[in-house]
Image 1: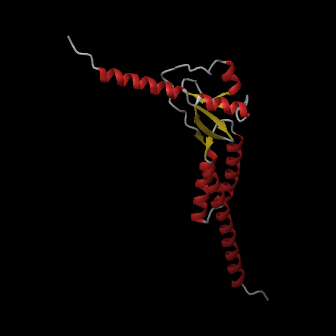
Image 2: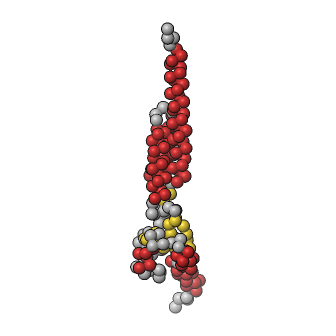
Image 3: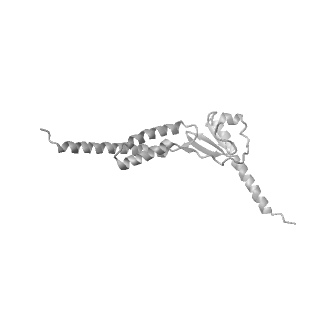
Length: 176
């Protein structure tokens, strides 16, 4: 007969405890950013304070995705419901407009030939608007700001370059 390996049983018990602890962690969206994790008591406190209202998107392991708190409370998700194939945490998405703004701004600043800075400024403002109005936590605010700054600098540099060309071209001609 084989012997019972108590260390393996203890390891399985610790993994089950860690899984239960992960199930007790809540994440929520606030001002377009992912917040958390908070435990059940902290979550209930946030609800009582009004920081989490019916429209606030929340998530915990075992849920199919981010859901409004009203739907979570009505659907019984307040009690841990295990679904083993769900990820431990859903990563927030990054704004595509923020990426475009940053790329256009850097290329526009480096080349100073094409008016890419204008596109960077437009995309940067659209990205900031998209991020601030998103109900789901979204990343990219820093990229959008960097794109805006480099876009404004690229546009300014382009205008200065055009001014030098006009001044240089006008100074080569002598008008009678």
